[in-house]
Length: 253
Image (cartoon, rainbow, N blue to C red; front, side, top):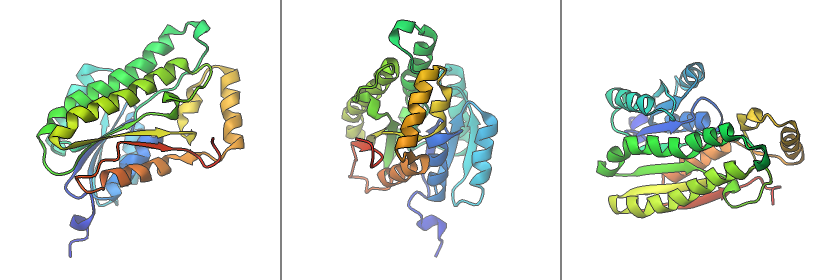
Protein backbone atom coordinates (compact mmCIF):
# COMPACT_ATOMS: atom_id res chain seq x y z
CA UNK A 1 0.00 0.00 0.00
CA UNK A 2 1.24 3.52 -0.81
CA UNK A 3 1.35 5.16 2.63
CA UNK A 4 1.66 8.67 1.28
CA UNK A 5 -1.41 8.41 -0.98
CA UNK A 6 -3.44 7.14 1.96
CA UNK A 7 -2.76 10.29 4.02
CA UNK A 8 -5.84 12.51 4.46
CA UNK A 9 -4.46 15.50 2.54
CA UNK A 10 -2.60 13.69 -0.23
CA UNK A 11 -3.26 15.38 -3.56
CA UNK A 12 -4.37 18.66 -1.97
CA UNK A 13 -2.54 21.98 -2.19
CA UNK A 14 -2.56 24.47 0.69
CA UNK A 15 -1.57 28.11 0.88
CA UNK A 16 -0.77 29.32 4.39
CA UNK A 17 -0.08 32.99 5.09
CA UNK A 18 1.98 34.19 8.03
CA UNK A 19 3.92 30.95 7.67
CA UNK A 20 7.26 32.28 8.88
CA UNK A 21 6.39 31.87 12.55
CA UNK A 22 3.71 31.07 15.09
CA UNK A 23 0.39 29.62 14.00
CA UNK A 24 1.16 29.88 10.29
CA UNK A 25 4.43 27.96 10.58
CA UNK A 26 2.79 25.27 12.69
CA UNK A 27 -0.15 24.94 10.31
CA UNK A 28 2.16 24.63 7.29
CA UNK A 29 4.15 21.86 8.98
CA UNK A 30 1.04 19.99 10.09
CA UNK A 31 -0.63 20.08 6.68
CA UNK A 32 2.55 18.82 5.03
CA UNK A 33 2.72 15.98 7.55
CA UNK A 34 -0.80 14.99 6.44
CA UNK A 35 0.36 14.81 2.83
CA UNK A 36 -0.54 18.24 1.42
CA UNK A 37 1.69 20.29 -0.86
CA UNK A 38 2.02 23.54 1.07
CA UNK A 39 2.93 27.04 -0.06
CA UNK A 40 4.33 28.73 3.06
CA UNK A 41 3.89 32.45 2.42
CA UNK A 42 5.29 35.29 4.50
CA UNK A 43 7.59 38.32 4.46
CA UNK A 44 10.72 36.72 5.94
CA UNK A 45 12.35 34.37 3.47
CA UNK A 46 14.86 32.94 5.97
CA UNK A 47 12.04 31.91 8.30
CA UNK A 48 10.07 30.33 5.47
CA UNK A 49 13.10 28.38 4.29
CA UNK A 50 13.58 27.10 7.85
CA UNK A 51 9.96 25.91 7.95
CA UNK A 52 10.43 24.15 4.61
CA UNK A 53 13.68 22.51 5.71
CA UNK A 54 12.14 21.33 8.98
CA UNK A 55 9.41 19.60 6.95
CA UNK A 56 11.78 18.02 4.45
CA UNK A 57 10.98 14.51 5.68
CA UNK A 58 7.20 15.07 5.63
CA UNK A 59 4.98 13.24 3.19
CA UNK A 60 3.99 16.55 1.62
CA UNK A 61 6.18 19.31 0.25
CA UNK A 62 6.61 22.78 1.76
CA UNK A 63 7.50 25.53 -0.70
CA UNK A 64 8.85 28.78 0.77
CA UNK A 65 7.11 31.71 -0.94
CA UNK A 66 8.33 35.11 0.27
CA UNK A 67 5.66 37.76 -0.29
CA UNK A 68 3.98 40.67 1.49
CA UNK A 69 0.19 40.31 1.50
CA UNK A 70 -0.17 44.09 1.66
CA UNK A 71 1.26 44.28 -1.88
CA UNK A 72 -0.85 43.48 -4.96
CA UNK A 73 2.28 42.81 -7.00
CA UNK A 74 3.75 40.45 -4.39
CA UNK A 75 0.53 38.48 -4.10
CA UNK A 76 0.10 38.19 -7.87
CA UNK A 77 3.68 36.97 -8.30
CA UNK A 78 3.37 34.54 -5.40
CA UNK A 79 0.20 32.92 -6.73
CA UNK A 80 1.69 32.64 -10.23
CA UNK A 81 4.65 30.77 -8.71
CA UNK A 82 2.41 28.54 -6.58
CA UNK A 83 0.35 27.57 -9.61
CA UNK A 84 3.50 26.78 -11.57
CA UNK A 85 5.15 24.69 -8.87
CA UNK A 86 2.30 23.18 -6.85
CA UNK A 87 -0.89 23.62 -8.87
CA UNK A 88 -4.28 25.05 -7.95
CA UNK A 89 -4.97 25.85 -4.31
CA UNK A 90 -7.77 24.02 -2.50
CA UNK A 91 -6.91 24.94 1.10
CA UNK A 92 -6.33 28.55 2.11
CA UNK A 93 -5.33 29.31 5.70
CA UNK A 94 -5.22 33.03 6.45
CA UNK A 95 -2.93 33.09 9.50
CA UNK A 96 -1.00 36.33 8.87
CA UNK A 97 -1.67 39.02 11.44
CA UNK A 98 -0.19 41.80 13.52
CA UNK A 99 -1.22 43.04 16.97
CA UNK A 100 -0.15 46.58 17.96
CA UNK A 101 -2.18 47.70 20.97
CA UNK A 102 -2.20 51.28 22.20
CA UNK A 103 -4.81 53.64 23.65
CA UNK A 104 -6.93 55.26 20.95
CA UNK A 105 -6.00 58.64 22.43
CA UNK A 106 -2.41 58.03 21.27
CA UNK A 107 -3.67 58.42 17.70
CA UNK A 108 -1.22 55.90 16.20
CA UNK A 109 -2.54 56.01 12.64
CA UNK A 110 0.61 54.22 11.49
CA UNK A 111 -0.25 51.22 13.64
CA UNK A 112 -3.94 51.36 12.69
CA UNK A 113 -3.03 51.27 9.02
CA UNK A 114 -0.60 48.40 9.45
CA UNK A 115 -3.16 46.27 11.31
CA UNK A 116 -5.96 47.00 8.85
CA UNK A 117 -3.70 46.43 5.84
CA UNK A 118 -2.45 43.09 7.16
CA UNK A 119 -5.28 41.62 9.22
CA UNK A 120 -8.16 42.58 6.93
CA UNK A 121 -7.15 43.96 3.53
CA UNK A 122 -4.26 41.51 3.18
CA UNK A 123 -6.59 38.61 3.96
CA UNK A 124 -9.01 39.86 1.30
CA UNK A 125 -6.19 40.33 -1.22
CA UNK A 126 -4.80 36.81 -0.91
CA UNK A 127 -8.29 35.30 -0.85
CA UNK A 128 -9.21 37.12 -4.06
CA UNK A 129 -6.05 35.81 -5.72
CA UNK A 130 -7.00 32.14 -5.25
CA UNK A 131 -10.79 32.39 -5.22
CA UNK A 132 -11.19 30.98 -8.73
CA UNK A 133 -9.08 27.96 -7.70
CA UNK A 134 -11.44 27.27 -4.82
CA UNK A 135 -14.70 27.98 -6.65
CA UNK A 136 -13.82 25.99 -9.76
CA UNK A 137 -12.23 23.08 -7.92
CA UNK A 138 -13.74 19.74 -6.96
CA UNK A 139 -13.76 17.71 -3.79
CA UNK A 140 -13.01 19.22 -0.40
CA UNK A 141 -11.99 22.89 -0.53
CA UNK A 142 -11.42 25.10 2.49
CA UNK A 143 -10.89 28.66 3.61
CA UNK A 144 -9.76 28.91 7.24
CA UNK A 145 -9.55 32.43 8.65
CA UNK A 146 -7.68 32.92 11.92
CA UNK A 147 -9.53 35.60 13.88
CA UNK A 148 -9.37 36.08 17.68
CA UNK A 149 -11.59 36.16 20.73
CA UNK A 150 -10.82 39.89 20.62
CA UNK A 151 -13.53 39.95 17.95
CA UNK A 152 -16.13 39.88 20.71
CA UNK A 153 -14.28 40.11 24.04
CA UNK A 154 -13.40 43.50 25.52
CA UNK A 155 -9.70 44.30 25.94
CA UNK A 156 -8.94 47.96 26.76
CA UNK A 157 -6.30 49.56 24.50
CA UNK A 158 -6.73 46.84 21.83
CA UNK A 159 -9.56 48.61 20.01
CA UNK A 160 -8.19 48.67 16.46
CA UNK A 161 -6.77 45.16 16.64
CA UNK A 162 -10.12 43.94 17.96
CA UNK A 163 -11.94 45.82 15.21
CA UNK A 164 -9.86 44.09 12.52
CA UNK A 165 -10.57 40.70 14.07
CA UNK A 166 -14.28 41.47 14.40
CA UNK A 167 -14.19 42.28 10.70
CA UNK A 168 -12.55 38.92 9.97
CA UNK A 169 -15.23 37.12 11.97
CA UNK A 170 -18.04 38.97 10.18
CA UNK A 171 -16.35 38.49 6.82
CA UNK A 172 -16.02 34.75 7.42
CA UNK A 173 -19.75 34.43 8.08
CA UNK A 174 -20.64 36.39 4.96
CA UNK A 175 -18.00 34.59 2.92
CA UNK A 176 -19.54 31.27 3.83
CA UNK A 177 -22.94 32.35 2.43
CA UNK A 178 -21.28 32.96 -0.94
CA UNK A 179 -18.90 30.00 -0.95
CA UNK A 180 -21.27 27.28 0.26
CA UNK A 181 -23.08 27.22 -3.10
CA UNK A 182 -19.76 26.31 -4.72
CA UNK A 183 -18.98 23.55 -2.22
CA UNK A 184 -16.26 25.61 -0.50
CA UNK A 185 -16.15 25.44 3.28
CA UNK A 186 -15.32 28.52 5.36
CA UNK A 187 -14.18 28.23 8.96
CA UNK A 188 -13.52 31.08 11.36
CA UNK A 189 -11.10 30.19 14.19
CA UNK A 190 -11.00 32.45 17.25
CA UNK A 191 -8.09 31.61 19.56
CA UNK A 192 -7.68 32.97 23.04
CA UNK A 193 -4.29 33.47 24.70
CA UNK A 194 -1.80 31.76 22.40
CA UNK A 195 1.97 31.57 22.64
CA UNK A 196 3.27 33.23 19.44
CA UNK A 197 5.56 36.14 18.63
CA UNK A 198 2.65 38.62 18.33
CA UNK A 199 3.27 39.92 21.82
CA UNK A 200 6.87 40.79 20.99
CA UNK A 201 5.68 43.49 18.57
CA UNK A 202 4.13 45.57 21.36
CA UNK A 203 5.99 48.85 21.89
CA UNK A 204 3.88 50.07 24.82
CA UNK A 205 5.75 48.92 27.94
CA UNK A 206 2.67 48.88 30.17
CA UNK A 207 0.67 46.76 27.77
CA UNK A 208 3.63 44.49 27.14
CA UNK A 209 3.97 43.90 30.88
CA UNK A 210 0.24 43.23 31.22
CA UNK A 211 0.35 40.63 28.48
CA UNK A 212 3.43 39.01 30.02
CA UNK A 213 1.55 38.79 33.33
CA UNK A 214 -1.29 36.97 31.58
CA UNK A 215 1.16 34.42 30.23
CA UNK A 216 2.57 33.98 33.74
CA UNK A 217 -0.89 33.41 35.20
CA UNK A 218 -2.40 31.20 32.48
CA UNK A 219 -1.06 28.19 30.61
CA UNK A 220 -1.52 29.47 27.05
CA UNK A 221 -2.43 27.33 24.10
CA UNK A 222 0.34 26.76 21.58
CA UNK A 223 0.65 27.28 17.85
CA UNK A 224 0.62 23.50 17.49
CA UNK A 225 -2.71 23.37 19.32
CA UNK A 226 -4.16 25.69 16.67
CA UNK A 227 -2.56 23.63 13.91
CA UNK A 228 -4.14 20.46 15.35
CA UNK A 229 -7.50 22.21 15.15
CA UNK A 230 -6.92 23.26 11.53
CA UNK A 231 -5.95 19.66 10.75
CA UNK A 232 -9.31 18.52 12.10
CA UNK A 233 -11.27 21.19 10.22
CA UNK A 234 -9.83 20.46 6.77
CA UNK A 235 -10.01 16.67 7.09
CA UNK A 236 -13.76 16.47 7.75
CA UNK A 237 -15.93 14.84 5.06
CA UNK A 238 -16.66 17.30 2.25
CA UNK A 239 -20.28 17.80 3.38
CA UNK A 240 -19.23 18.86 6.91
CA UNK A 241 -18.29 22.50 7.63
CA UNK A 242 -17.18 23.68 11.07
CA UNK A 243 -18.46 27.23 10.71
CA UNK A 244 -16.77 28.78 13.75
CA UNK A 245 -14.44 27.45 16.43
CA UNK A 246 -13.53 29.34 19.61
CA UNK A 247 -10.52 27.82 21.36
CA UNK A 248 -9.29 29.02 24.75
CA UNK A 249 -6.79 27.95 27.38
CA UNK A 250 -8.63 26.02 30.07
CA UNK A 251 -7.80 28.72 32.62
CA UNK A 252 -8.99 31.63 30.48
CA UNK A 253 -12.57 32.65 31.26
